[in-house]
Structures are given as structure tokens and as C-alpha cells.
Length: 388
Image (cartoon, rainbow, N blue to C red; front, side):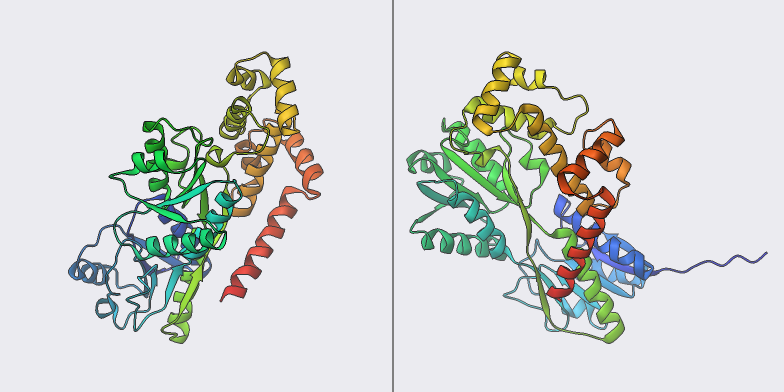
């Protein structure tokens, strides 16, 4: 008996961060790699050129993907010379002279955040950066400043050393953009220390949609979700083109995927703090099986009858209708951005009955879950091709 062993081609992916964004980029790379029969080896720690050279000698890769999001230095072209390589989020002020790059359109993410805050009717606006002179941080500040200026609103730059005092002095309500979700959470805690309410006094938006930060506080923090997974897929495609055709220096951009609304910008007119708490509670727990109207009423600290009446009066939806709306959004998100089986989509959507969930989905969207997934994949494929 003869056994044939398939030798997979190795691609190294040099990692710069352990945050959720990195995992999403890696997921996108893996999706492309499966079709090319690549083995993607993650290099978790590299600080010097000798570290990189050691990894190259160990794995002898056919190509490399290098995440440069946490670096302000020039592209390390000398280390990767002669090896097909694609840089991710290389400092555009110090571009590679030999290899292509996939670059986040940080300004587009800031513009989406600005539209969210400008739509909240704020009387003042401010920005909290990382203080580390990152190129993407500067781009976000500059675009946010341009958007607020176009609306006739000045922009204050916050400093962690004086953030509480500045927040107290800004006209209320004030809209704050954090350079990322960590910065947005710093704003949240500073507002709490200053005795200010979110979102009544301070309305906050972050960037990256990292649930480790956005869901760590109540109300949760609204955040712009960049297309990290799409960026991973597209940079892997760029690497394949460089391997196959010898393509060299060029830059592609990836932008925001969507904005994920949470309680930090829940300022619907006529909605009381009590109902806002209920909406935030539903958003957080809608996909947990068994969430009941009684549990939401308890969060509102009133009877079921009064809670139901007040919720419908202020939102136009019943409590149960809001729960189903949140579950539908979750299922649509999973069908669009994951490959998990439909039965698991139903389960993660909070439904115990597979049949009921499928009938509800069909009624609301006019499509079966499989049809919806196939349609969204087609839209994404066209979008990716149009950006190349």
C-alpha cells in the first residue's frame, strides 16, 4: 500500500498584536489560504531583524505577511528582500520600496464615527488619542476634525492628564471619539469620575469594535467595525499575486464594515433612561435562550404590564419584538461573516426551536438563511473585486 503525503506550502504571518482585530485578520488569511493549500504559520514574537531571519530559516516560507500596525518605523525591506511579502498597515509616511501594502483607511472610520456623533445632536466635540504618535491616530483626528468643522463645530483634543476637567467644562451633551476602543473606554471612566452620565451628558464612539472593551461597561460603547477579515483575505490575495506574477509596490486600502450601535449613543428622542436601560439589557442578553419579558421588566424595576406599555409607547416596539429584532441582527451577522452551520446560527441567535427561527427569518427577510448567506457572499465577492 502506498501513502501519498501532501506537502503544504508555508506562509509566515508575523503578528503585531493579540487584540481581536488580529484574530479577524488571521481568519481572512485562513479563508484565502484554504483555496491555495497554504499552511499559515503565525510568528507571535519578533522584535529584531535577527528574530525575523531566524523564522525565515526555520520555515523557508514561499511568502510572508507582516502586520505593522504597532510600528512607526520604516518597512523592513532589507530583511524580506527576495521573498514575496505583503505589509499590513505599514506607516504610509515610510512606505515600502519593494513590496505591496494593505492599509487601513483610518479617515473613513473616523468619518463614520463623526456622522454617528453629529447625528446625536451634541453641543461640543472632542477626540482622545493614544498619545503615541501613531499614523492611524493622526489620520483619525484629522478626519474627525474636518467632519466637525464642516458642520460648523470646533473640536477639542483631550489629554488623559486633564480629561475629567475638560469633560466637565465642555458644553453638554458632548460627543467624544476615542482613537480606538481602549481610548473610548478611558473616556467612559473619566466621565463617571466627573459625575457625568453616558449618554445624557457624554456620547462616546470608539473604533475597532473589540467586545473586550465595548461590552465591559454599561451602557456599552458604540464602535466602528473595520473590515479586518476582508483585509486579511485581500492581503493574502495580494501575496498570491506577488508569488505568481512578481507584482511589486502598490497600496490597497480597506475601510469600515459598519458601525455597531450600543448604549453610549442611544439618544432616541422621547426615550427615558429606564427604557434605555431595558434596550441595553435586551441588546446584551437577547441571544441567551429563555430571555423573558419578565426579566426585562425587572431591569426596568416595574411590573410586566407597566414595562410593556412604557416600552411600546417610547420605542414603537413591544419588548418581545425588540428581543426578536436583536436576534435577527445576530443571525444576519453570523450568516454574513462566518461559515458556521445554520443550525449553530440558530442556536447562537438565541432560539431553541430550529423550525420557528427559520420561519421567522424567512418572514422578516423574504429569504431562507441559506439564500441570505449565498447572497451576502456574492455581494462581498463583488465588493472585494471592485477594490482591487
